[in-house]
Length: 318
Ligand SMILES: C[S@@+](CC[C@H](N)C(=O)[O-])C[C@H]1O[C@@H](n2cnc3c(N)ncnc32)[C@H](O)[C@@H]1O
Image (cartoon, rainbow, N blue to C red; front, side, top):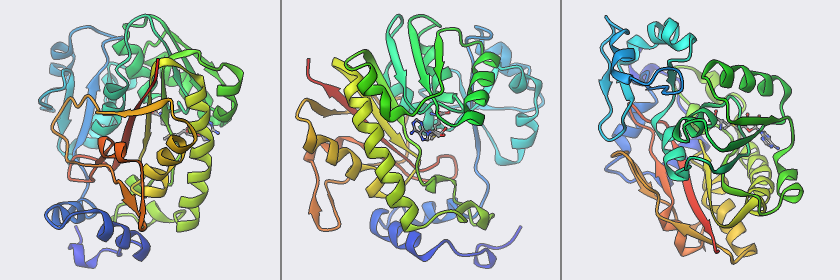
């Protein structure tokens, strides 16, 4: 493998973002995460088989390590990724590869059996399936995805994973709040974003479509979707907003704009299942103050086993 110095550098504008956001104590670990493949995190799918230990034992000779604090979640070294990805237990839906921060978004949503949940940007369906698992396939999930090819992938994934409580809608999520205002107990908006979490110096194609302009365009889409998400939420309900972007314009700034528009939403602390490398959200950016409650949001840092992720939980006043 190439030494880090021989790998292509990250885009300068992105390095400037890391300079602004990542404290010096974290920086070597964050920088190293861009130069080596990551550990593989996956979860047992209780909708296919109830006993996680029995399913995971059948992975032998692979020897996953349980992730402390998250029942049914495991980790394997990066070199086992191919073997796991092509394993029949994965293709048959008993196990699902999913980043730990991605799972934490569903922990933050905290769906309860029997509730009505909106998943406003659902494909390929990893979070929809985890919501269904947390609800024991009871209640109802409305899963929205406007991109046709991704919609059918969502449908196939949910079938493979044994999800029976989801109804799928091929639709622009920005319209949903207007069509069904104050309908859902909980709303997840895992928004389309500039996907900065996917950057790796091992593959410069990972940032080929990224630019500060793309960040601005993503932020505009996110703002429309978040407004719709807030409108679709019942009084007293919980809204989780997440992105796999590090840019504050796509994260705190989008939430800040919503909190300026509506005074019925309150940031809440995230139920945090596991010791993740994360920082509190920003309360200033680019010289401007942001809503102080944004300190309760979390920015998961990219490390050897985590991807960058932003998580925010809001409660609508009852
Ligand atoms: C980050 S991905 C969602 C990942 C998904 N929540 C999961 O865990 O598998 C964002 C999704 O939003 C979809 N999307 C893009 N524009 C949208 C819109 N206007 N309304 C709803 N979803 C949209 C994208 O096609 C993409 O599938």
